[in-house]
Image 1 (cartoon, rainbow, N blue to C red):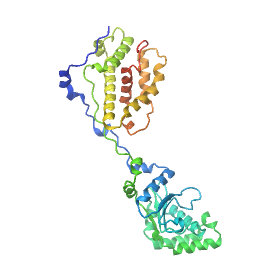
Image 2 (image 1 turned 60 degrees about the vertical axis):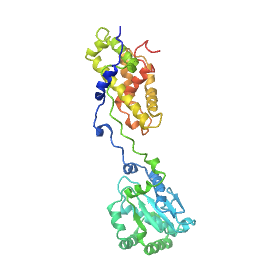
Image 3 (image 1 turned 180 degrees about the horizontal axis):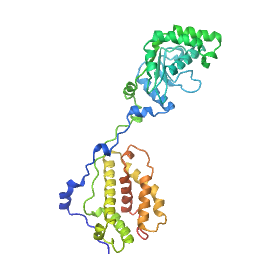
Image 4 (image 1 turned 45 degrees about the horizontal axis):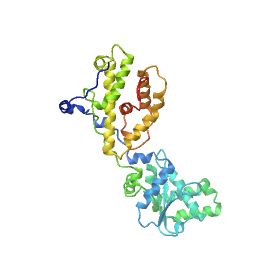
Amino acid sequence: MLDPIQGPSEAERRASGASLILNYPTAMQFPAMPSPEQIVFTYPPDEFEKFVEEWVPALDSLYVRVERQGGAGDHGIDVAAFLTRRGLEGPWHNYQCKRYKGTLAWSTAAGEIRKMFAGVVTGQFIVPEQYTFVAPSIGPSLQQALQRPISTRKDFVEALRETTDKVITDLGPRMRREAEELAADTPFEIFQTVNMKKMLQQHKTTDFWVKRFPPESPPRPAVMAPPEKPEPREARYVQQLVQVYAERWPSEASTVTQIAQHPTAGPHLRHQREAFFSAESLRRFGEEAYPEGHFEAIVKDIYDAVVDVARDDHPTGWKRLHAVTSQAISAGLTQTVFAQHVRPLDRTGVCHHLANENELTWCEGEGT
C-alpha cells in the first residue's frame, strides 16, 4: 500500500518559507547576453549591409532617400544616400560596407577607391561628396592614410599609374588617364571611416533598433526549493515516481517512508522534486515578466521531443523515466528571448509537470 501524500500545514509553510529560496550567485545563474557590438560582429556581409542601410538615415535628415545597391556590378556602391532627387547624378554620399573577420586595411580600401574612380569615368555616377568606409573594425593602416589626405592622394595617384588592378586596366588608355587625372583632382578629405560605437548610438534612434536588439531580458529570480514534504499539488507526479521505485525495489522502496531512507530512491526523489519546482519557478517568472504563452511554448517543445520516447517500449518505468528526461535535456527549443532562461533542471521539471497532468506516465498500466 503506497503512503498518501500530504502537504505541510499552513503553519509549517510559514515557518519554513525563508528556506524555500536557493540563493545562487546571479553571475552563475545568468550568463551575459552578447552586446549589440558583439552581435554586429557576427553579421555576414549581406546582413551587415542591411544594418548600414538602417543606420544611414539617422545621420542626415536632409537625405531624400537611402538605397542599398551592394552586389555584382555595384561599381563600388553598397549604400547610397541622395541629397536630391537627381540620385547618382546629383550630390550624394557613398557608404562602403566591408565585413571581414579581421580589420579593414588601407590596401582593401584603396581597391574600392579605384573602383569608384572607374565608375565615374565610365559614366555610372559622379564623385560622391562623401565616401565613408563602414566596418566593424578599422585597421591602423587605413586610419593613418585618411589622417594624411594630401600625401595619401599623391601616393594613390602614383600607385594608380602602375596598378595591374583589372578594374583600371580594363578601362583602356584614354579612360585610364581620365581616372588618374580625376584622382589627382579629387580632395581625399571626402574619404572617411566611422566608429562602430558611434554607429550603434545613432542606430538606436531608428525604429530598427528594437527589432535588431530586443531590450535586455530581466534576470530570472532565484529558484524555489521544494518544501520538506510533498504538497497536494505534487500528488500525481510524486505518485508516479513512487510507483517507479516500488516497481524497481518492491521490498525496499514501496512506500514514501521507505523511499526516504533508500540510498538511491531517496536522493532521486529529492532531485526530481527540485526539478519540478525549478520548472514551477520558470513558469511563474514567464507569467510575470513575459507575454502570455512563453512557458507553454517551452512545455510544447519538450513534449513534442519526448512523447515518442515515452510511448516506446521500455522494460521498466525507471528506464522510461530516464529515457524521457535525457531526451528532454538534449531537445532543441524554439529560440525566443524567454528560452535563454531554461536550464537543464527545468527541462526535467517540465517532464514532471506533464506527468502531473497525466500527459506522461512512467510505468505500464499507469495514466488515464
